Length: 155
Length: 184
Image (tube, rainbow over all chains, first blue to last red; front, side):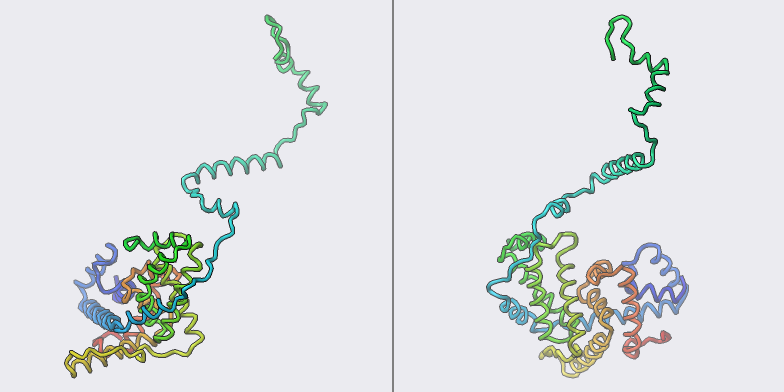
């Protein structure tokens, strides 16, 4: 870590190094051990933090009175609340779908595949004459529709 | 009901429970005022902002979803109202809000403290709005950078960038008091 990076990190994360994540903290401690300038910057940052905190700790004494005034000024009769019109999309939004995301994704994927196959897949019409002729000409296929030799039952 | 969490109270407020709303308002009025005063630098504006923020809580409670802490949502409402107000109304420095002095303090020490506090308050008040908001949220409210980011509706690195710029500006303004040494 270089001096400029150290200054930037102090400004981002504050001058309390114990609150930093491990990796930058270790790098900062190494720099502090080696560089007096880094120690000076940390000290200056701590003084700035102290000054800001001091400026902030001046709690307005009249805060409670002001809060009481605000509460007293709230209308006795409150305005109507804004509510969503009940509708099925909102009811759906209230359902927690997170546990089923994988299954929903799989279902959506299969649905998409079905649409793609339906649009671009082989288009076979069972009433097509060529199909019927081909099927009847095929001995194995014809056998499928033959009655059972022993029982005479048709499939 | 006094011991109920903010989120539980909000669930009740969402169902139109006025008592829960007034209890929640009592919890947050002073905290909202402090934040609003720091941002607007003006007592009257701060009171109006908090009153409006509380009414928005009531009106929009049915739409509230407990995705974040109530405090985060409320502070965001207060902050947005403060920032939009500051765009319309000329700025009044925070120091002009004039908090009463501690009569028990030593007069000389009090004067020095007061002068230091005034300089700091002025330096902070002169920061651009969002930089000042980042400083107030992290130092005054003691929020983490992540919480401040949620209120300012930005990323954590966005808040960090605001803090870097704000502190750079404060270092320049308060240079002699920080005793910067070699830091420019």
